Image 1: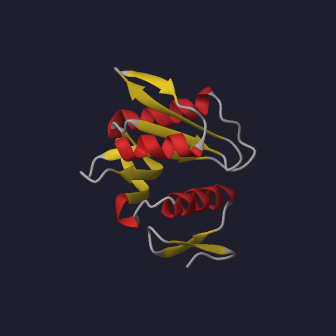
Image 2: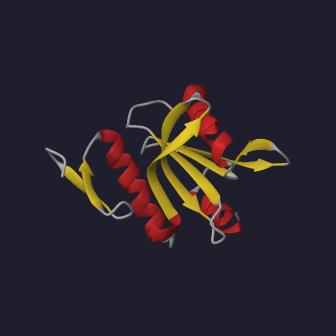
Amino acid sequence: MAAGPCLWDPVRRKWVAATPEEEVRQRLIAWLLSAGVSPAHMAVERALNYGRQTRRFDVVVFSARGLPALLCECKEPGISLNMHTWFQAITYNAVLQAPLVLVTNGTHSLWAHTFNGKWEMGAQDAGTLLAALQQA
């Protein structure tokens, strides 16, 4: 167990350090679970090889067919959701090929989906994102 304050991660099934970014990640996971996403259909902080670099994505939700459906990039509160943040998520998604991408800092969230090979911002409400996730 990590030293200092910790949070239980129901997907990884272990205690993790309660960093500001981790608190955002765990709120997102709790929201996904409350929306009916099974922890068996989620992966948290797993390695991702991009070119010669190894990165770690925050959360991926998989479809019933086992394919990546939603890539989530979490930032600590106060970090702005700008082009740099979006580019980081899209870069990770070049490997995963999820049709939906979400970036959040716990206060603000943005998501987009692919349509005919191009990214389009989704209506920025939770219900629309969940509907799109069910179709992915």
